[in-house]
Image 1 (cartoon, helix red, strand yellow):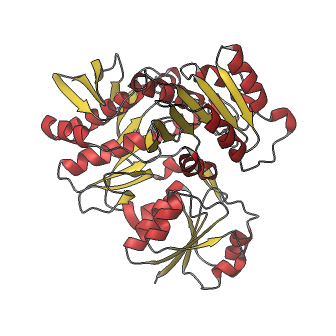
Image 2 (cartoon, rainbow, N blue to C red):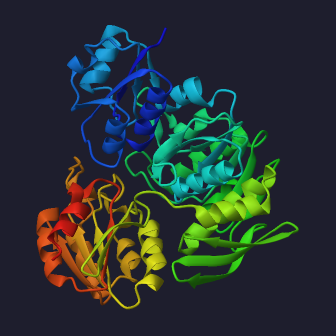
Image 3 (cartoon, rainbow, N blue to C red):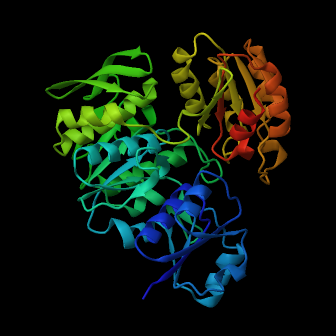
Amino acid sequence: MIKKIHLIAACGTGMGTLACILKEMGYRVTGSDQNIYPPMSDLLKEKGISLFTGYDSSNLDHDPDLVIIGNAVTKMNVEARAVLQKGIPYLSMPQAVNKFIAKNKKIILVTGTHGKTTTSSIMAYILFVAGMDPSFMIGGILKDFNSSFRIGSGEYMVIEGDEYDTAFFDKGPKFMHYDPEITIMTGIEFDHADIFTDIDHIKTIFANFVKKIEKVSHIIAYDDNDNLKEILDTPVSSIESYGKQGQWSFSNHVQENSKTLFDVKGPNKKVLIKTNMVGEHNLLNCVACIAVANKIGISDKKICDALKSFSGIKRRQEIRGIRNGVTVMDDFAHHPTAVRETIKAVRPFYKSGRIIAVFEPRTNTSMRKFFQEIYPDSFLDADMVFVCEPAIKKNIPQKDKFSIRQLVVDIEKKGIKAYYFENSDKLINALILKLRPNDLVLIMSNGGFDNIHVKLLEKIQ
């Protein structure tokens, strides 16, 4: 009988969420990770999950009945080796989700390069407001629940479907483990350069996924992405498109103070939506969820009520504080498209001040030179850009490394003042001298960024 479960790499968004779910289900849960940072570390502590800092075979001395191994863990990891040597049963994260949580649920799976967390969160909240008592497992913390997960008694479960590989003992993508009833596909771009060689490699992964689900899952697909169109070129048994010209589309969007109003048009239907979210990318996320909600019979009123009251997700255009007229905002953006769309989305709300973009390129892809020529255009809507060397270091050959110094030079060539910094402390000290009332400091990183948000707010006088 399984009573004690240990998670290796417990602070990743998916693994941390799983740890919390298992704890809530009554298991004794422990975890370990090399890099422990908020908000996930705070959530795990709040849930009473014991965390070991760093990997060590002694972290298994309490003899867990099962170990769940995250995809950040290599087969050379000292704890992973100990698991194999001791013969402790182990699973990957998606295997554990299927075993403990998703069994007998109708899965709504959200996949694609961008917007997975936000779209999954919107979908889960619509189901909740509609009284359908959903379960969800999402790679971000929903403000309405102060959680990245929920275990409900309803028939639906929303899962954020990651294309990243599953584990060192299973190099296939995580989303291949799920059998969704409905799948949202938000589009395909190149990402995860540490495991994918090029865009064709990624398209092959998604094409294999479509072949697996096309007979059983209703697909809601973004219509303005050529890569996605290509893999959906062959007939799929049940599919609807969304986008500006899709079967489901939006129009007439206007900003009204901090709200967005827009019309959504679908087959034989038109709905006026009001939401706290901003930016066309978020409106598209809403449209995808509206299409799913319509498919499963949720009323227009419930959909409107949910989108009007949805509070958002931590680290997605999240205002961390305002000091002396300066707003500090946190966002998870790191891919060039996400950086561009995030800055573009907040631009209308800070017309009386400047947008100062602070960027840490710390993903496996952004540390490599794949987007060297693309990144500069992502900052065109910013007034000033501060770029910092990431705190974590990767063993990347010099010829393949992304040059942050070159990024700064290329941004300045486009007429935007840009600065390079070796670390976050030097960045903060320089930034403080530039700030003035009505400025927005938009901090973008997929990591903790040395707790830069709190440090900056403390120093603003």
